[in-house]
Image 1 (cartoon, rainbow, N blue to C red):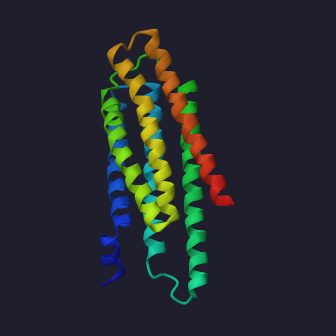
Image 2: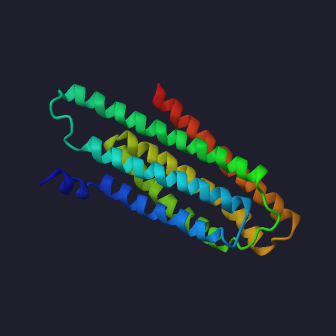
Length: 214
């Protein structure tokens, strides 16, 4: 059986591939939604999901490389060191992506906010659905990490835990904006929701970077 065939049967590979495919739909739909809505939370969520999708695709590529037969000329110990070094670089980059995503959202929230929020229904539908989907992926990655100890799957478990909690947090302000867009409560919750998303993403990114630079 070839390496490619083995990877296709690997649960970690299938989970990463599925999460990458599903995550890629979020930025597309939200990007189209921005044509009719300009909520700060909606804009920041678009930036966040785009960055996360890139991180998940990167994790998929590195996972395939590190679980294949590469570096056949190395001893088992040398191959393990190569694998760990590559995983740490990948996870560190994902942490950087999360920080950049969070900072971008803060800039959008406080410098490019719009009083006219427009239609936030696309973002609300995605965030409410994502709460369930990301929660399921979080549990799946956590289970896989417990079984395999693979560092990439462990970071994905942390990423999806953050995604599930963040989506829960932004669903509330988006719902208020959708129902009562002209109220002061909608304005405040929209800004607060976006700021919370940003802060949590930055915290998760810093934690991931520090952990992989040790």
